[in-house]
Length: 119
Image (cartoon, rainbow, N blue to C red):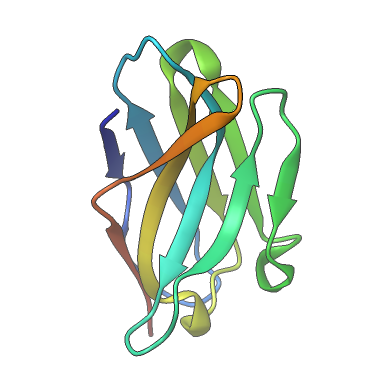
């Protein structure tokens, strides 16, 4: 499975960006899909995830500002980011959990897209 992300960029504090990540076609089922981020010198942290059934999970730091959604027909996950803050600056990485067998999953990562929030 290949993941291709887009939508990053530079925005002023308080602004908005929308990230997209599309997974290539696969015979296997993508269960969870979502976004992590990594700032320079920091660990990779979960931002938002969504299950195939639509259950979402958010990091406390983005709750109420970010919204994750997915279009299963297009194998695409979106991250709408509003009220952006300088501390949201990071490389955002799309990930997908792929079920290759009833009790076996493999994780795939996209190439990352830079989000910079600065005045």
